[in-house]
Image 1 (cartoon, rainbow, N blue to C red):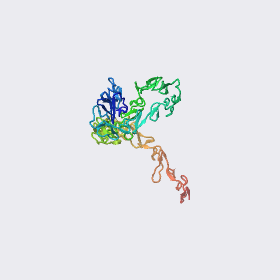
Image 2 (image 1 turned 30 degrees about the vertical axis):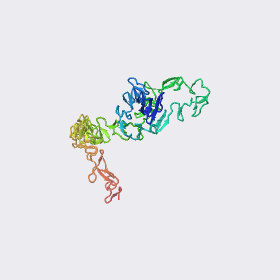
Image 3 (image 1 turned 30 degrees about the horizontal axis):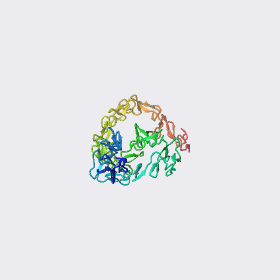
Image 4 (image 1 turned 135 degrees about the horizontal axis):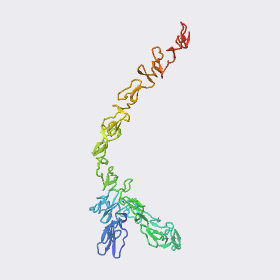
Length: 546
């Protein structure tokens, strides 16, 4: 039920011969003398002896006797092709089942004696912050028919904000006191509030004039432009509909959304612009989505839908578990899911709750975890568990084809089989090149001798080695075959030979003299130079005899 059809009707058309008596919370109308009057609760109107809701009754939609055509429903006092998202169709009318006493939570679910509908449930007492007014739960902060107090209705054009009626002017109108006026043409407020024109003057474009200019038309003491004025479009009193604007002196659709002419100031599906839909708990007032009367505010969240909001399911702060939905004001996990703690989980696939709540699949190497499949922990598809590790045995060199089947060093695992690189052979623990490996020359385990290398699968002396005395000799370092077979390097005292890169050397301070390494500084037979012997009885010191 919307703000346009809630509360006591404060203006009644009284026909001659009718008596009219007003009661708190209800209205008594059309009581011909001698007959019992019809007493209607606030929000309903007497039509042919019955109290009806003009906002939802398909046989009296917007006014008594206004019947919606076949296939249409009554929504907010207008016949529409379908009900807005915030309502439910019940018998040809669009009902807000969260607050309707006759359809509380669903069509036909009427509340009992002394009960009221709040959040789709029949209650004896309205939950905070709602208050009971004339048998209904309302929000005194926002209900325009019960603004600040029960049955304290706001005037036409006003909204209820914080329990106070606030005048909201639309279009080019300006607020002057308690009215919205056109300062361009209002004779009592010409150009500014309370700036009235003289008795014989008219208001034209915000100035008092003796007569209207040729391009304007006099209507009700003001000079208006019939080409653009929506209240006098083309002629005085020819008002355009709420969904229309005045252009070139004719009423035209103000906003077209899709194929429909809509009022973006009041249409909850196009509030302030095409496609800007209000939530199910909001209405569109002057192009802005605002809370419906009776809908609560939860902290910083404005007017949540307690029937569907997972953060406020059933009441403020009642949050549903992760992945749970709020259905009819109750939290429910999706089909196939179970609530474990504060989450809805699938026990067939969730590794933290595999098969049952709290059963966690273990971790394996490299920080990964087992997966949960059909409610059981195991390796992901395509992998095999080998110890505490899930591996692809088709490609894993440590588990090639089967767990613990380790490939030789240098080999790869392809299709579950170990394979050495091209031109290499599996020699047990490693892949070897039999054509060049000195430890596996020509065949696995066949080692070449010292100073030999493997060439084309056969052992041979490696340069700079040569065959001396029937064996492979390193001519670069062998003191008995230094540079060539049979070349013997000088011998120091103690028998140490010295061959470097195929050349004999005496280590400093020694020099070669007559096939021996001698110290020319101290040797009396070679004092200062080779073969320079000191006289008998003399010693050699610093290369000199004395």
